[in-house]
Structure formats: C-alpha cells, structure tokens
Figure 1 (cartoon, helix red, strand yellow):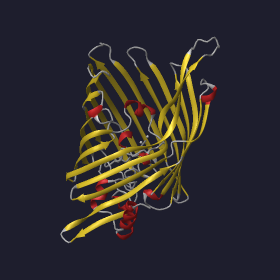
Figure 2 (cartoon, helix red, strand yellow):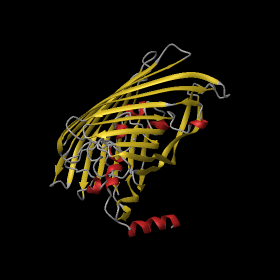
Figure 3 (tube, rainbow, N blue to C red):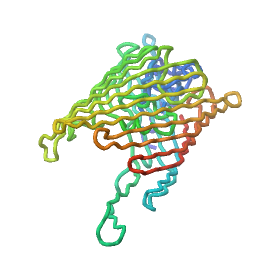
Length: 450
C-alpha cells in the first residue's frame, strides 16, 4: 500500500464524523445527512455532471460528486475528515465515495459483416471515485474520475474489402477495439459567496440538458440517451456561475468548447452557455431515478449554447470561421412513483465559406413507474425510452430512431440512497432509416454505491 493510501485510510479511521453543512450544500450524497429526504425530494438530481439519465434519488444522498441540483445539495458518505473550532463551523477536508457499475452487453447487427454481426460480453464496466472537501470557508473542491477497462474505443486496424475477388477493392473497413482508460468527469473548485450562489471553475459537464445535469449514478438507463450524446457529450473546461432557488435555477458559463486545452487546439474560440430551469411546485433535483414515492413536482427548462470559433489548417494558417448554435427545451414531471421527462434539441452550424447551414434536430422521451415490494425493502420500475435524431436536414437528411425498454430492480438495504443496490435489464434497438441498417441488443447493469 502506498504512503498516500495509508495516509488517507488513517484519516478515514480517525476522523469519522457527521457531514458538515457545506457537504450537504455541495456534493451528491448517499446518506440521509445529505440534506435531502428520499420521501420528500424524490426527484431528479441536478448535481452531478457525471460519463453516460435522470429521477429522484439523485439529489438525495448519492455518491459525492458535487452537485448542481436545483437546491444545490449533494454529498456523499464515507470517510469524513473534519476540523472543529470553537469559533468556526466544522468543515470537511476530505471525503471519498463512489460507485461500481459492472455491465454485460449483447448486440446483433443483421447487415454487418459476419465478424461484426454479433457482439457480446462484459463491457463498459465502470468505477467512479468521487473526492470532495472544504479546505476553506466558502471554498470547496470535487474530483470525480471514472475508470473502465473499455473506456477508450480506438481504431485498431483498417482493411481493404474485395467482395468479388477481382482484385479491385470495393470498400474499406475499420476495426475498432476497446482499451482501458480514465475519464475525468469533474475536477472543479467552487466558491460560494452566498448560500444561493456558486462560482465553479475547472472541468465539468455543461448544463445544456437535464441529462447533462444528472449524475452518472442517477441515470434511468445505463447511459444517457442517444440524442443527448449526439448534441453534446463529455465534459469541458471553463467557468460556471449558478444561482439556485427552490423554485428555479439559472446558470451562465464560458467554456473552451472543444473539451480540451485550447492552447494546442486547431479550433479556437469560446463557448457561451445559458441554462434556466423552473420548478413551480417546489425543489425538483435533477436525476433520472425515482425509487421512492413523493409529492407532485413539475419542471420546465431551456438551454442555449453559442460557439463562435476559428478553425486553423494543419499548416497553421487561418481556415474558416464557424458559428455553432444549439438550443434545448425540457419538461419533466414526478408524482408518486411515476416519473417522465422529455427534451427537444436543435443545432445550426454555419461558416464563412458556405451559405448552407448544417442543421440537426433531435429529441427523446423517457419514463418509469416505481412499485414498492415487500414493505419498501425491494422495488421494481418498468422503464422505457424513445428517441430520434435527424442530421444534415438542409442537404441530405439522415434519420435514426432509438427505442429502449426494460426494468430496474432495487434492493433498499437502508434509508440512504447509497444503501440501495440497483439492477437494470433493458432492450436496445436502433434503426437508421436512411441507411437501412438496424441493431438490436440487451444490456444488464448492476450498480453498487459506497
């Protein structure tokens, strides 16, 4: 065991104390100390930016990946290191928690080459570690890293295809392979000049949609929806100012727009982001999971991204100027064990060389209904989702339809969200209407939080 690991373990054993007020206000939590009651806040956790959809338990205690919930609460259990002073409220210097998501996938593509027609096995198994702390009053940090044996999907080889054996290649096929990798879901420093306002700097998900504001461990399905990933995926570097109120939340930020360090990028510019969510019936955290019954909640939201950029050629000389505008509209509702949400997405990209805009439209709807079994020890939720994307509408439209359905099983070993074990079994279907290609599959994911 390394010296660092030994030191962290010593801190955890010696300083196990109750969560501080800051922890409740900053991180996703698993335990009841997170400041959110599973019975009352059973909505969508708005906190975590967390790698690939939404409901109630997210803003309840969850793995501690600093949150963006409409109430601004999210904390995690586990090792607490606190300092107590007679004149100063206690602060957590370090806390660690996370989640493990083993996953099994089966995919069948009727029109693919025989080698690629059927794929199955364990894949996308992820482990998320979330470290948080408040070293100074009003200042806190969150580091959320995701590790997986198949996180990177790289091109391993390229082959020339000669179907009729006449020596003339008709096609070129690429062979992709999965490789181990580490993905930084969130690495931020937060400053709270007041309880309702947060200034965040670092690497995070841009709050463009509901799903981008939902933690990885609070998604209805094993991953975020296809349309959401098409219009905006991954994380970016920048700053975000958020004002939270039980009835609404507003955010404004500036990001690199490329998901990487702009000092060496061939695309230069700044991405401007705006997001507004209103919850007229009360606090409604961002999450895709409802595993408790709760009061009626309604949420409406809209997001806007504008990315003017200059793209340089490989030689280093000026290329083209691009204007990229994206917008989203969101709606969600929760009552009892029923949860439903839908989002409409639109993108228009123009440049100074062409008068033809590149336009894409997409959207999805998903829902679940929680059924308590055996005095709330066990639960079952039928889940369903349908989505569609239409690319390049102004020139050669390409339409894709995705359908997913299945069930989520819950085992509540305690009252806290991190005491719940979740098992998802889902069917997956994708139809690329324009190309005439289909894919079908089955996914099973187990989630354990700690």
